[in-house]
Image (cartoon, rainbow, N blue to C red):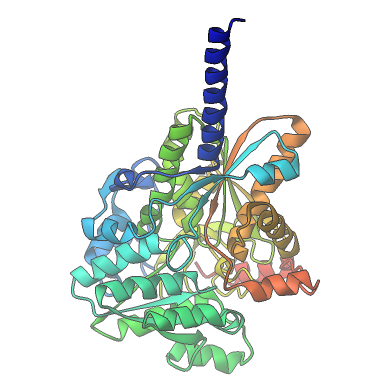
Length: 471
């Protein structure tokens, strides 16, 4: 090889190495330009008919006007809409731009640790100011309520992600915010309470003496850890008693899942940027909002024949998808909500005080449950020690300490990656990493000291709760 050719060969080789390194870097963290943030939400009801909520008295489908004392008109319109694309208001997108678009990471170090041929990606929602995916809907809900003249919002929260997200959003739109926080989480997670209060919210441990239903529960069981079903009942009772107040829900309902589809819409664009397509999408499920937001935009692809698997991960202590029954049930313990068609453990179900407080709900989103029942989504359940072990591996390889809820998605992704290792399959796995665990370090401390205990809710207690269904 002469000197001239050797020179050009060297330059070409250098260019190849630089380009390869740049490509590797881009594949580790894939960012969308801010001007490519989606300007519309995707509505799953355009492609999958979701069973309507029923009036408990008549068992007939609810009319939007029946729910106007609780929700603003625009959210009710979205709740029942079959329009495929719904525009995101500019005021909402402006606040979204504080943290969105969120990054899609490739978990290179985790792949190496597992020695798997699979590629593992995760959509990181922990970059929002409250630290989770929840502001994707809280900002939208606060906007629509403020636009209709509402002055205060009430809500419930389990682990505190939703309560802090709503407190954050209400502050931006000048709304007062009252949060009924499940008692065991109120005690386990004081920093989320402080975060809510810093944004101006009133935070009340549930069950409380603020509402008639809260008093009733406390009289029956003074030591109850509380539940999301109980907290929902209190928040609704508070809202309907005040003309200037509406209720806000952080998961389960169609309009909530609609707002969360910005996660999956961004994911689709990010995978297109790197020329990849996910074979598997995982997510943790309590009510179903973060997982649904991640995989719903991919459902039309599956309906057209694309080979893609959706996996919902939940705790064995609250196994609504894996052990519940698919039927109409109340969304709250006091039976104030409409009847929702979902997988349920019974509205009277009170799960143990596990650290994944956001997954302690007796039911799941009707839209998600419809897809599970149709066989389009597979559900799995894990013990919390295995979940925390997965979270520790993730922290030691990828650096992020994730929320106990999000750790269920990490566990599912690791399980699927290990299956790929056994079978020699080079699949692309993606999971929605729904939030950070900076306020959950007491749980990590218990796990690190070997004090975290597994709990699988007994089948006989599940049967008893289901038998109490009067629907």
